[in-house]
Image (cartoon, rainbow, N blue to C red; front, side, top):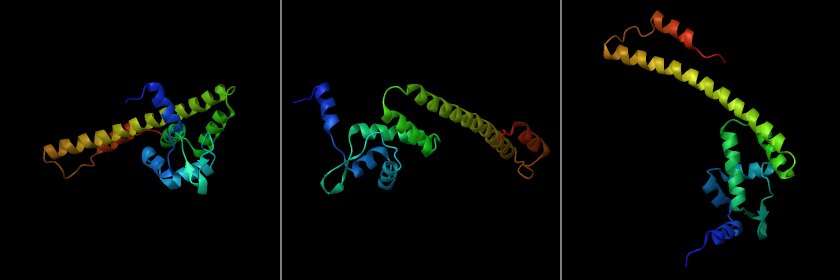
Length: 157
């Protein structure tokens, strides 16, 4: 017997996961999951079973995925905590959430621009080495033209 999409959705809502299962699904360590909970990064409190074992819902896993993406993109934990607080507060603060996310997006775009600049420098170095190796001229790879070009395309911090 196959489940309808509605039944699957309802089943997903009641599916409970252990901390180990959540760690496996999210790629976060058990220690990190406990840390995120202690730091107030979860939108909803993590439920506890008899004996104090944590029990996560699918929504918790989705939220942890969002947190992981924000953290991986460089958002500091206090900002993720603030975002979680805003989400917990519910409707009425969407502008604040949007402002927080827009600021972070700008920071990510700035880092991407810097990375592109650094990549240009590295790509130039690769091309210089490849050309020199192809022509058997490996004795003096640090010629003036390389140093001049490095200074010309070095990205600002």
